[in-house]
Image (cartoon, rainbow, N blue to C red; front, side, top):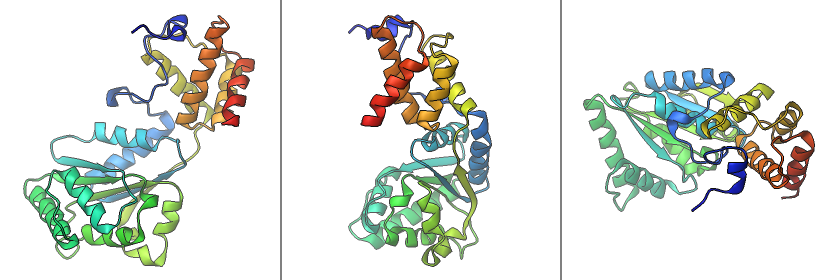
Length: 270
């Protein structure tokens, strides 16, 4: 199957803004590296972490950077993203992710996970549960998580919870009924808005991975790309890809502000 024409037009070996990116090729901007450092530090200290941010701002990239940074020896990462389940089904999902056979009752499932965590502790392996989209967790699950993290009369840090979600997750955690869990979360992080330099760095990085050091976007186009996307990676990917295709159809080697405006206008209609 031949590559799309627009890739050949710009001398690209693959779509530069594709969702498919290996961990070692992940881009973490300079402004985000401290966030990743604190996330890694929180896990290495056997603590719990709260990470919030707007959609598309780069939370998943930060999590993947964590996965790449934590040593395999000594840590066991488990990723759960289906946050809309009730308590029993949530723990059954967690069982499956851990490679355990889920039991029929909620108590049995919880006991299996509890025992598994203790066994990992005896093997000097620290489990880290990454709970993505945690703002969607049912209240009964959120209220029960502090029990999952309570071992040896709350004196043994045998696992780390990393709760990831939209900013409203922080608001939910501050509710009185969730104070038992929130008080246990010592590392509280928020991904703020990206800076223009972050967008420029990201575009250059993705183009370089796709086989070119030449930037087809002029300065005005990049400025508008940041403004229109707000620095959100998914929006950058979509708008930039459309602009490159438009330039290819017009047989242009540069994406100027006018072309970018056309891509943004169409994006705003969706």
